[in-house]
Length: 411
Image (cartoon, rainbow, N blue to C red; front, top):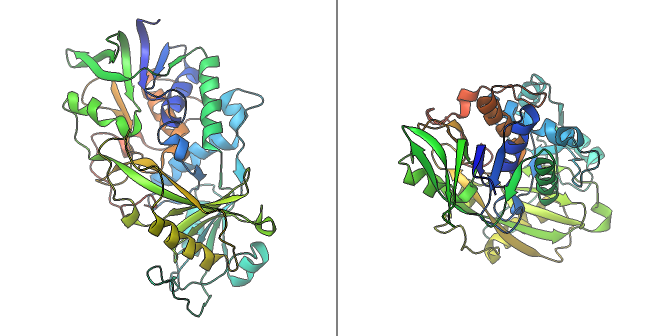
C-alpha cells in the first residue's frame, strides 16, 4: 500500500483517469487514483451517451472539445496501446435547425476557423446523405402528440468529423493505460476528506482511516464532489448532482449504420445509434429536463419516466417517419451541473495543491482528455502532444460565471 504519493486523484471516472493518464504521459510522478465504486464506470461515465461534437456557443469550449476529441480520434496513440477496445465511430453530428434560424452557414464558418470540418445541408442534401431523416423544421407537439403538416426549408449544420464511443470501453481502456503507465488505481476506496496544513493540501483520508500524503490532490469525484469542497469551506460553485433521463428504442435494419448523431432543435432531442446493439439512444436538449437535483448520488431513480420516454420517442418518430417504436427502454444517469453557468470548474482552488475537475454539466466525456491536459500541465509544468490550446483561465475556479444563452448541456 502507498503511504505517500506525488498526486492523489479522487474519482476513477473518465475525467479522473484522463487526468492520471495525462500526468503520466509527461512525467514520472507517482499517481494514486481512488474511487468509491467497485469498478470503472459506476458514476456518470457509465451512463454517458459519449457524444463527441464540437459546436458550443463559446469559442473556448469549441477549442476544448476539439482538443479533447482529438485524443479519441487517435485513441491508440493517446493511450500508447496498440489495440484498445474502444473505437471512435465517426458518424458526423447533424444540427437540425428549426424554421427561421439562419445561423448554420455562420456556425460552419466559425468551426472551420478552428480547423473543424463543417458544412451546411439543405433539404436536398439531407435527402441524399441521410434519407431516413425528415427535413421538417416545424416543432412537433410534445404535449398532445397531434401531427402537423410538415414543412422543410431550413439549412442544417453538419460537423463532419464528430462521433461517439462506447463510454465503458473507453474508460476501461483508460484504466488499463493508467495502470500500464505505473499508476495505482484503487476501487472500493472512498475518500472522506482532503487533509491540509499551512494553507496547502497535504493528502487524503480514506473511510478506512488510512491517510495518504500527497503533494497535489485532484477532486474528480463527479456527483460526489461536494462534501470534499464543503469540508474545506470551498463551496463557491453550485455543483448539483442532477438526474438525466435517456430513452432507448430498437433500430430497424434499413436504418442501421445510416444515421449521424442528431441534435434535433425543433424536437428538443438528440439521438444516435448504438452500433453494437442496433438501438437508438435518445436524450433531451431542453433545460427543463436538467432540473431534477439528486440529494444522494448513491440513491436515485435509475429508470426513465414514462412521460419523458413517450415525449422523446414522439419527437424521434417525427424526425424518422415510419420508425417502429419497438423494444422501448429507458435509464437515468447523473450530470454534475454547475448551476451558475453549466461549465466545468478546472484548476487549482484557493487551497494550494488542491485542484478541481468538477461540474462538467454533461460535457465531461468529450472534454476529459483536454481537462486532463489542463491539470497535468499545471501540476507537472510539462507539455505534451495532447495538450489543449484553451486558456486555463477560461474554466478556472476563481473565474466569474460565463455568460450562456441557455443553461443546459447544449450551451
